[in-house]
Image 1 (spheres, helix red, strand yellow):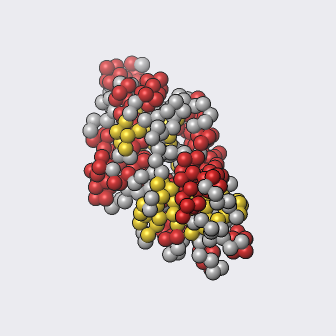
Image 2 (cartoon, one colour):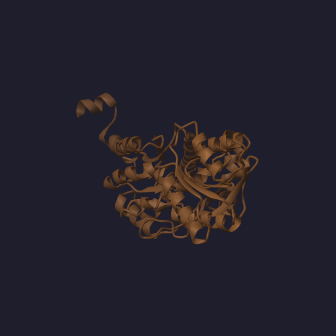
Image 3 (cartoon, one colour):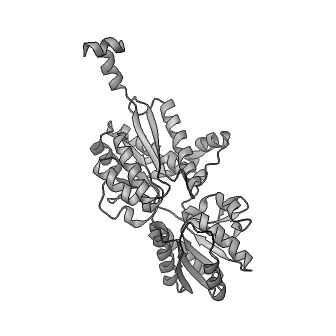
Length: 364
């Protein structure tokens, strides 16, 4: 020990001081690469800005935050590897993952390691498995699916509607809920099909849609496949209106759809950019040439959630954080957040948007 102290030039007091002032590691995880990397980029930008702002104001309980970034590429197996890596890095909080199919297996690992997590994953099973470490900062698919299905039934009565999913946990769950919402309002789907995400040719699906005279596509899945379907439908002489979920908020859709994005509608939470409490942060992002759309402000809010919970608990220990998160109300850029016994957001809201040019606007 004397040799170690001599070699480092540190006394025992300095060593203990260094340990006492170690940073707290917090993390994000999602698709930083792959087909949905633009969503990962939104999450990264939001979290980085939040961590910088929190650190500029003194950090959390007097210590700075260090942000770890995990790339699961929306692959469940990769998500498990990321989760194990984050446990080894001794993170005290996770915001992630993004795809429900990644969040579900990864959350088991964080729960076992007693790491609290915030997520925007919307599949009901994320919070229906009895885990106490998960706090969902957005609504669920059985909520947004009902809104989307009801909207289709009331605004496209008499039209032929196909309900399609991409076989993912998120996509199938959302499509099932949209179908339920439509049927409950008296409009039965003309077709119910599934596709395989990641393919380039959806002409087989387009042919089925055309043969059935489908005019509206209720889609559970991600923006990448919708863009291809719209392009190929147009080539086949079809004009489709698409209703999707929150992942259609990605502005990459505008370019990828080749001028067809204006026919895309989707459900998403009320636009956080219009929240007065977010005004300064929105301005900060725009000054940095970042439009805080999609999931940017949710990632920022997740870090605010951790900071406020730790401050209330006066601790970053799991038991203390979990108790604070379960019982508290937190003021964030996306509004007030509080959670029920399962970790669901107590007051979720979904509205309908439509793409117009390179922006989405609320229609309901």
